Image (cartoon, rainbow, N blue to C red; front, side):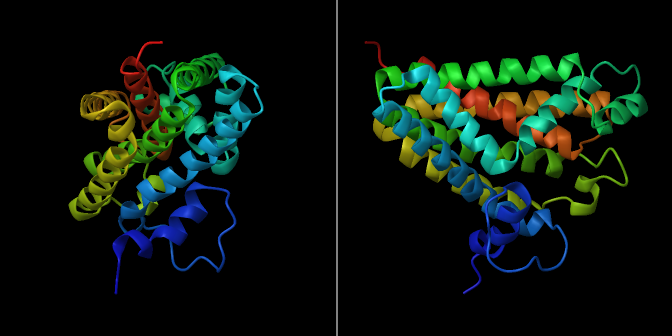
Length: 258
């Protein structure tokens, strides 16, 4: 049986994480094939962070340290791929025209905009996890996995909605995911997120979290179209990072009071 969620999973794990995956890569980097598996990749990365957080809380390290260790574990699992995209995208905002912005984005050096974006992004994620874990460690763990899962749709959507801004970039060589790939991935992300969020925080929390992540994704899409004339892998990574932050912040709003 050809299951689209499993067909592209090994390749997606090899490209989007640093986790050891048995076997050798076959063929090129095809985002249309890997697309349906991206929510599973996100959920796995989120689970690594959630386990680290629960262990830290069990050791009485406190919500702040537990949240920081959770994000650190996720960064280690992905190699900081999406954080690098956020930093590069933020740095490129200093350019005055599209070609210069793309040139800055490609530069491996990090500037002040990139540093500030990383710091703010980390603070928002860690702060959200601390707030959620102070109410319920299990709510925080479930919310983190759901956020990591659902946010992967943001990058896939950008690759589907916009043309590649740079002809020789990674996103250009990966191709554009088809509507079927996007719909399969979106359906999986919603189901997984619903199973995690609804039992603890309810349906309204899930709806608002999905809307918040969607608005963040749409904002990045509009920005990319105007500033770059399309998308790049870094912009897709930034969209994933911002969608994850928006999802977590929305869940924090619905965390029950003490």
